[in-house]
Image (cartoon, rainbow, N blue to C red):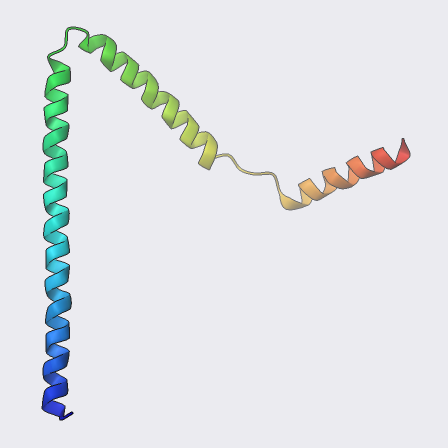
Length: 98
């Protein structure tokens, strides 16, 4: 393989990757636009409902509950490792004394 052939092969590979990246970006943009369009259509339908106030209150309640679950899951600080070991040791000593 000559250096010229190797260079052309590298350009072709790079062009193929660039083309693939552009195609992926275009596909992702199309998906985002269609998803947003669907969401707006759904939102428009919900606003036309007679019970929109109740629906909004339920949505707020659900979002608050979800937020509480997320905070409980990720914001709770687990007990220190040494504290856990100390509790296990104390439990074993208490069990051995019985």
